[in-house]
Image (cartoon, rainbow, N blue to C red; front, side, top):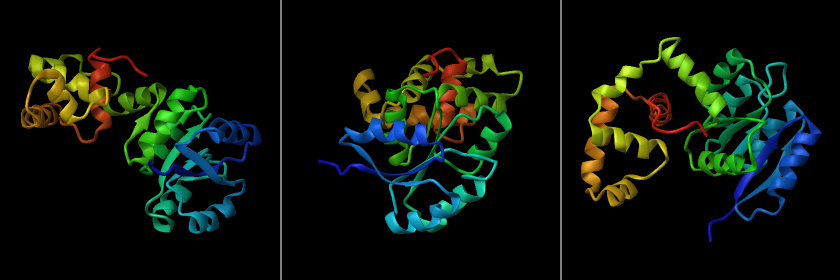
Length: 216
């Protein structure tokens, strides 16, 4: 049995902290090992626990800042960062995304989405809720999103793009489509080249843009 994900929670709002603590209290896959309630406690608690995951409320007013997030990798390199914030300012959100965090959720997300984010980000994968994906799309594509770009893909590539965006592994896609993993990888490389994809998140961005999947 895999060890539970060890989480350090940084949130100076007692109700939010209590809610997450209660939510994860009965979960065998993740547990909160300590809480950061003051900014000056972040570094010593990271050094003490070296957690798998830091869940933080990003706050430009001084609680957990971009500088703090950058410092996490120096203090505890194995710790991934998941932001759960009520801040809906696009500029602030883009600012924190540029700091290299793996996941970002709003506080309106469902319990299921929060658990999926915790598991994904702890594995080093990226996970963004639909609102954050919309902001990323706007940043990447501006006002004119290239709807016609899907025309450069073959029917098979479009099908594989959809499955990749849904989180399927190369092996599962190969099994489902009765292809070899090598063939799926070849199509994947072609999709990356044609769409100039630079990160796994962009598979989701394009799939949503093309109407292949709906935002989570």
